[in-house]
Image 1 (spheres, rainbow, N blue to C red):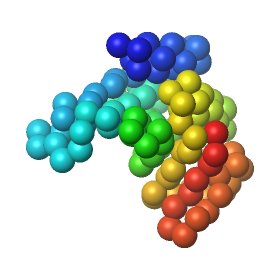
Image 2 (cartoon, one colour):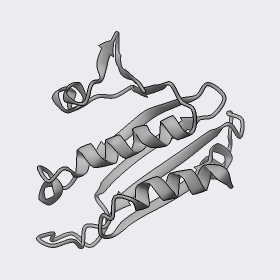
Image 3 (cartoon, rainbow, N blue to C red):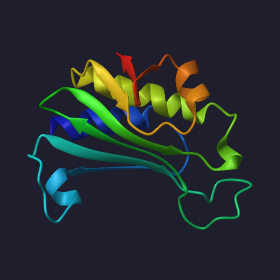
Length: 136
């Protein structure tokens, strides 16, 4: 699958230890799917058993949807454990997500829930009503 190859190749370039990427169609993600197969859920997680972590499971992640029909990356959930903050992981993950979007011919990244406006603003996202967008 071309989609899977593009996504995996881009995130593998990061060479972040314990990084895992999962890709699911909308119907694989939800048992009752109201959307077409043009929606894909991508979860990028970093296992918390990295140095200085007390957790046994993954609490650092970047999740997003690829809307193939409308060519948009959207509905992003993003969290980094404290021991990973300030090391450039957030920027690298976000920039890689944007690069994936470009390779999939997306023009926009859209965030519906923004709990860290200064981070997204720093990376060039602009607030439009109740969401944040960036042209890529």
